[in-house]
Amino acid sequence: MNVTARLSDVLWRRPRLFLLLLLAPPVLWLGVIYLGSLAALLAQSFFAVDEFTGQIRYDLTLKTYAELFTPANFDIILRTVVMAALVTAAAAVIAFPIAYHAARYARGRWKAVFYLGIMLPLWSSYLVKVYAWKLILAREGILGWGFQSAGAGWLLDGYLALPVVGGNSLSTSPTGTFLVFLYVWLPFMILPIQASLERVPVSLLEASGDLGAAPARTFRHVLLPLAMPGVIAGSIFTFSLTLGDYIIPAIIGNSAFFIGQAVSSYQGTAGNIPLAAAFAVVPIVIMGAYLWWARRQGAFDAL
Image 1: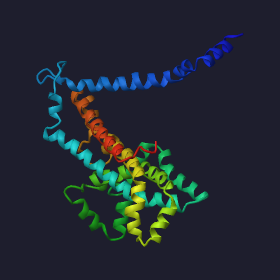
Image 2: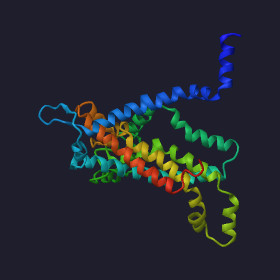
Image 3: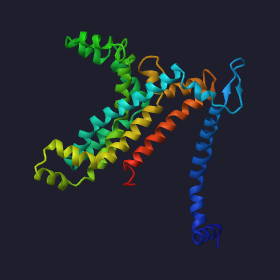
Image 4: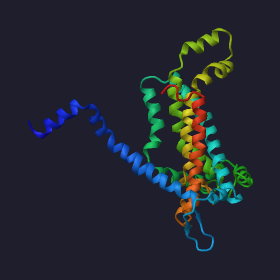
């Protein structure tokens, strides 16, 4: 009996050993390389940088976390959370009718076309999409040209003059950042909602109509509650991805920092690793609380 046959015989007789060997590589990757490096970074948040020498003082302290509540740093956190919430809400509003049409009316090749249209943007390069939108949103881009050609350039200029949402152009405004976030993460909202709507029996909607309920009431009391797990699942993706992204705000929008940019800047340029680690804790805490709430809402009951 050769070595291969003997090894196969041993693994057949000891299925737990076989399972252990199969799980060892991914567990080592997740537990040691990923979670280990993440824990090492987060442990730095309990240290602080000496104000005089600029060196890290390895004394346990919460001073770095207190720095998160300074006006400048808290503004970064608030800006990121508000943007993530707005993108998630807008994505849900846009995704729901698209997903409903795909779940109820798309059949055969049209369903394949739907999936192709949703997945196609995900197959292209992330940076290519962002830089393409930067050209589209530029003052001399296609949107600006469209407004000027329609004689509505004054409308775009008036909007860009607004203090909170405006800027020199759409590509350097918070509105531009919002639009690119919405475009990039929208498929992650559509697909979970569509999967959730697929499981809603048509008979329930028909029964609601037969009992005299208006379409709006059927939507509020029948369709939306049954589709809510998909909405929550999609919101987990869009909210978390927006919360941690730093490439889109670095390319689109003004110079206002988001959490991802703060982590990158403090860890690299500024050399303040404890503060970068403290900023990295913020999305983890927020998403932990959000996942707890989603679990209370029954978003994971179908798993």
